Length: 277
Length: 210
Image 1 (cartoon, rainbow over the protein chains, first blue to last red):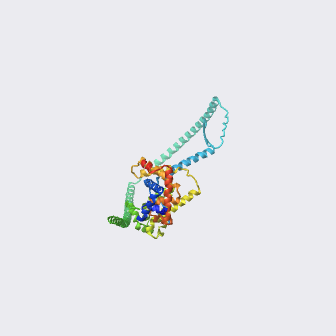
Image 2: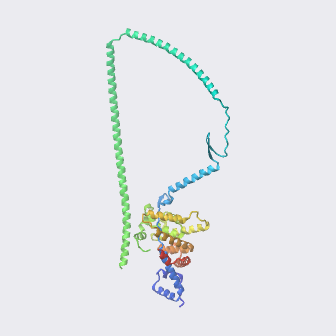
Image 3: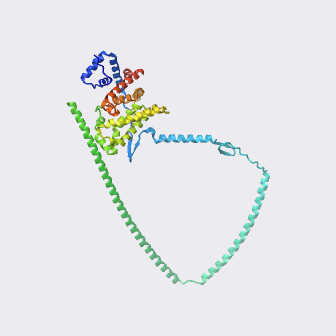
């Protein structure tokens, strides 16, 4: 009894892939070698642990052929743009703060206002302005007011004089004009003639206007109808094309599905047959 | 893989889908992603133990699939072919990690838990905190244990225990002999067992919790 199965035979035994003859030989061997038997038993029970581990669920990405390149569209939510955008905003804020820190950016506020500064702060010296007493200010105001009043008065008097002069001259010319109108009284018949002539002219102008607009309108409507029918025709053509392509793809899909179903059915039938046999 | 669900059947019979994908049909390509993304992600997650890295690896795997599916000659070899891409990316990630042993500033686990909740909500089903907590506990224990075993053993253990591979298929993914796969699997399971035993994690303690 010098038979000693090698490891590949033992593996085949573990997975029930030995023929009867070999299996009996291995079993015989194991009976006389309890340590090997124990090892195999341990492996067997460990395999049961391994089988407890279930597959992880994954969402498969879709692949798109782009010329010779393959583009992967991942459906992983973890790497969505929103997440990346948030990271981006956070990073730019941090950068801003860093820049502020290194340039000594500061905002200070005092009675005279708000200061934004970079670098070292420089104190702004306030210039000393000689102070004025209330009496001084009153005096200066009084003087300027008096001056203004004087000049205003003289200007008003001047304007008043000018206006009265002009009024008088206008009156004179008006009187003269009225006088002349009274002298040349117009013949009524001339006026009537003139009115009739005016009426005629208006009539013809109106007639021309109406006919021309009518023509333009007709032309426009004609064009519109032509354009619309052309557009309808195009729309119909493209609809027909779309229906045609939809039908084609439906046909393709059905064919693929049918062949797949046939194959699956065939396989089910063979499996059933095999089991029956 | 056992045909337990309709999804499994669909995965095994996606021949037309693969042929259409090879012609550059974007819809067919995305249907393949829909069928396989969860598998590849969970495979990578068990290997690298980090959600972010696993997501990156899964996306890279499918980008590579989009680019190279035309070069796949045998449609039946799709599954090992896809896992080969993912496994190579996992190994690459391992080498990268070793080169610069940097610790990530953000605690990835927190991130993962937030993700778990998000998924629970997104699925609209009742998010069960207790059940979830137990799963997370088990997960963190097993992830830790897995990360401690040799990478070559690790990928074999995951493929056999969780991805329903046959030995022949694992050999194809890794480009080694079937015997090597079996030896690696045995070594991996043995190491894992020792590590879990050291952490005092047995079938009884886990069953008590779950």
